Image 1 (cartoon, one colour):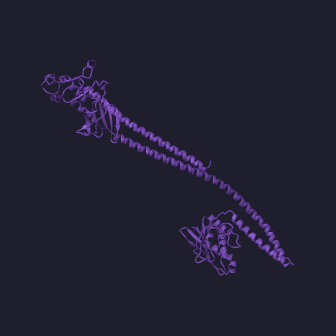
Image 2 (cartoon, one colour):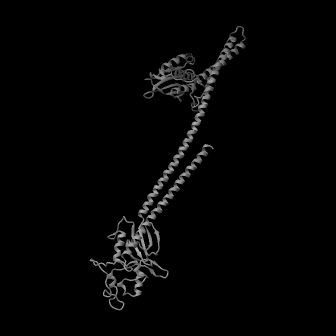
Image 3 (cartoon, helix red, strand yellow):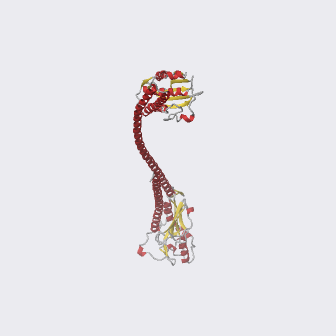
Length: 505
């Protein structure tokens, strides 16, 4: 399996892991939403249980006055001067009859609507509606109410609503009024024990016994409690869901970042491993090339000895007394070819020799002047002008290696220019601790295509060149930590510029 296939497998696994994390967060968010809904449901059942207990405690003989029930409803709805306290989730509540009409309500009554009696819920953006049965009240299949609670208006309103004479009329003189307290409010007596309570749906308080059965049934059908509707705010529910949703999104985002980072880390590790393998192979190949280089250098060195013998024998034949002219000419050809091969072997040995830089404080200008004196015969032969100038600077360099660099650059310039040509050597300060050294000529110059190839081994534009002179120069320059470049000279010629020479203290 190659690196691309391994990368595809790793990427697929990381993507699958991220998708699992996302699916897990979606599942957890749904669980939080259901938990928040369950919390509202539990609170609605708590309110229903509380209200059922209160109605059982306040009713007497199946009846309950509304003026006794209103304070309880208002307290449950947290109503203060007709303004709902924002901390309460309960917006409105109402008690329903068998038809689903609201008998008595509290809170924001505009939110209440006709509901069907039975346990249900209806969710909207701003609130949720719960419709619950009143505990202890149920309707039989025959339509008879079992243990109902009838909500009556206040006692005064109830007695004033009937005529005061006639057979079926009621008045305060027909039955004893209910007991009242100091404030004049009706005080409900304690309900009788469970075993003594009458059964059936036609129970009525003593002060309503003057009412006809039809009127009482109509009143009971309209005012009996069969259900409870609660309208609760979903503000906290929505805040909880939104907060949890953002939390899950952040977790999913960081999970994606982690998966992406793991993928990039794996790719970098794979590339690093591959580079390390390449470095090991390159090191092995480099060691092998060094061994071949040493072997080639040794072979070149050993080859020069037979060449020197051949050259000596050819010289003896050329100088022998009585040697025919043809033999002397062939001997001179052998000597010339032998010298060419010897020069190439010498350049190869110099190029393959390890460069050990022994830095010292040297003067490039003085070294250049010595090299010019060494090449005096070639300079005079072509009638060249050579100028050695620049600032008297001292640099840190290996004197022998710097001498070889200047020798190769100057001999290359001498070979490039024609008769009466001009060559310049100059050194100047570039920065505070660095210098620049240049060798200029007014020869034909180097084409732009050859400037990048001219420092490669065995590349030459001269018929008599070996192609290793400038390669040796670049090798020595890089061993010192310098840079060399071939540039065009104006108006004609070439410039070999060496930069980053470190000035001696």
